[in-house]
Image (cartoon, rainbow, N blue to C red; front, side):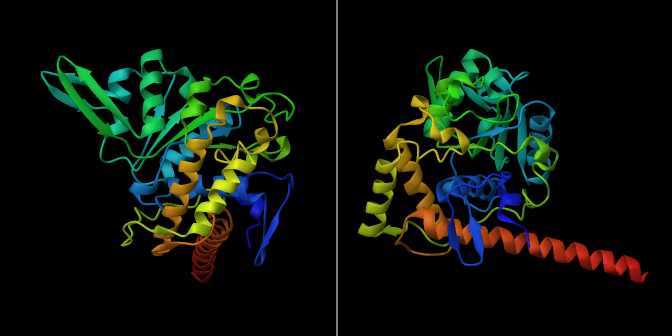
Length: 318
């Protein structure tokens, strides 16, 4: 059985809740981590995905993590912020014809943006619009076209030592434009212990893609209880909508938009209800979804391990 820590990349323990046979970390942090993974492996339908930012270990580990996400996910495309331009990422208009950039192609299931802080200023502003609204409007030579974008994950560098200081504001520890974090619907800070960094994003953490997920559920109905729980969660913790990991304990004014936090929480709840083929949302996404998603990942990982074991046994028999 894979431990919860192998799914999150964090060996340090914080407040936990008991969901069946699994011990999960703080539900908000765990939900964020699992959401990014489920979104990354196409287990949320396109209508339920949103744009997220994930702090990864600095240096070569960020390179390998971004590469693994891109390689193992069907239809994923990687963008290097250090070498990107407007035409490649966003697109252009020529003779009234819109040529889509990577963010607006139909094929990618996920766009992995590595080192987005290095994007040119014009691209950065356009990406901010995509992060906050899921779309971008071209206005060139009298032509106005609004394009929708699939999900994206920003791969940002954590502090060089791999650890965040709780007492120091997040933006003083990383090289990241404040507007990027403000626009992202979800921010996850994954700071593995230094001695465990080599295990980051192992096969136990990023399970292989099984293709796009679709649901027959149109629009789940929210119960009054669920609405109240979501609102109460956002009001109780101004950072809850971002579900930050270690940085959440410090003052981070760049990621405290409660209205956006509420919309993200509500979108998550609806997405997970569709994932369960459920027409109703009766609970906060924290409890039911964290439990459900953890079991989903555990089951898939166990099946992968069982398949691998069977293959090894066949090899021995031969």
